Length: 165
Image 1: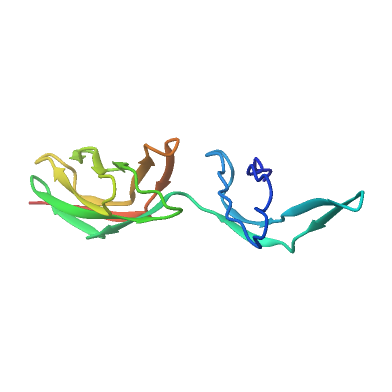
Image 2: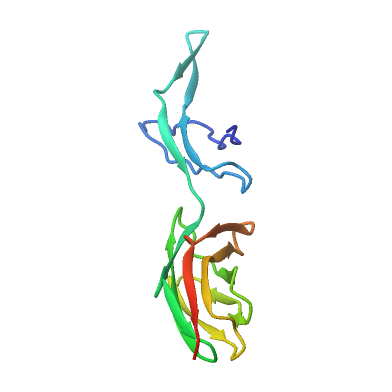
């Protein structure tokens, strides 16, 4: 991707290295990309430019989600909890809004948030007494990085089984 170049005025006199911060817009695709730096100078009236060797730049989503307690078995009319863990990436420490998706009919879970600087939260899942028995294999948890342009990532799918009481 074409990233906006960091504003570098040059090396301070007598210095051999400089730190730069690279900010990627939220809509840049994830993956590994080569990063090349170009140095320019003027010496004895002539312009010179030198490129660095490519350095890998890994662009990642701000977090991955893992669900402990899956696969999940829940009797109609009962409640249980799952623990949702965030593996934070790229320095993101902001809140992560959570929503359990693809629940079977009659099964609910409230929205939850992994608080700023925290890495996990428990989410209660409730099966109504009228919830139909069976397996739902595509349940997952969607996370939203509310302080990083609402970037989203979902946990792996897991199975939720509703049992007859």
